[in-house]
Image 1 (cartoon, rainbow, N blue to C red):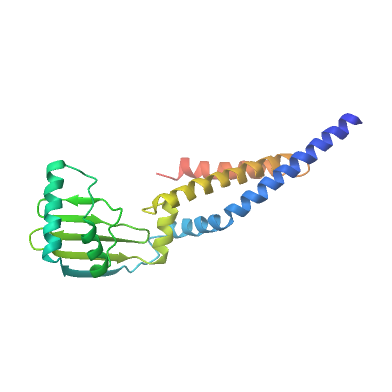
Image 2 (tube, rainbow, N blue to C red):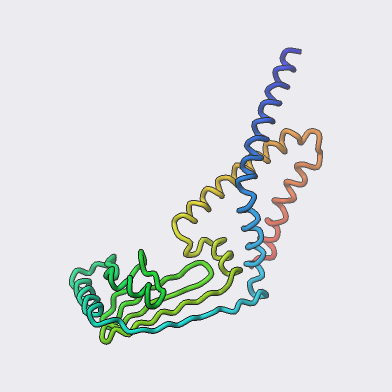
Length: 215
């Protein structure tokens, strides 16, 4: 009787612990799971969901003093072959003020006749080009809408380091949620005979689809 009582007490302890970890991880995952579930649907039907990109092109001419500084920076880059060299600070400020282009912490492509900065982002794209000969500057920005924005968040496309960390933490919480759920199923399986057939079905269906119908 003591052995049975001890076994029952241990079972109750582990069941309580698993439930606590399960509900905490589910609370952490809830909003993210909804986001990834909805965007999984929109990504799967991307061809049927029309997107009308809004493209804005702005042009301006870089003032001569700034152009001279940019030309000097280009010459310095060519000599030092410094791939990490950024645009001069005053040029970056001018681009933000005149064209609305934020080039901070962006990689710069230094060419013989121009500098080019790509600025991709979730749900859109942008770039800046400044001609080294006459200072002609162009900034094009493309917005593909909210659906594209959330789709790109789903894929982690151009979303930055913070979002990368979020996806990693979210994935870990999902693992905790699933693993604790599996152990809870195991502890209740004796009273619920359909538990393992349903779990097996959840494995068998995608496996068969992948083997037989995915090419």
